[in-house]
Image: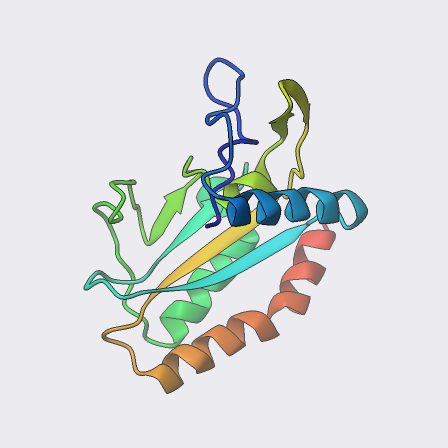
Length: 170
């Protein structure tokens, strides 16, 4: 449902898809774009759970790549909570993971849309939301007890003010 490919550019500077994959995806992506005009995103943290047998990893959409301070803080919290990180290999979507991070993946997600510098609306290229720090945590649900996942996600949420203060200095 979170597909945004109808707003995201392909290598020919055209929309990757002509229309939303469904009505709900179109509405959600449109809402995100409208909201980001009024409230430009600066940090996006998206907490997912994955029922696969893989280890936890994060997606990072940032010009700073693996050096993004928000991504570094999230990795630090995951390690502190003894969450096993997927060091190398691929996501279930065949995206490369290095040291627990999949960097600047083009997956058509809302998260990619929030990070996009340019988007396309009705065949016109426009400025995108351009959020500089987008991190998606893919926590493995099968091997980590619910109370531990909640505590870890709570620490990530509780650290947002510290992350904001740290990156606001730069």
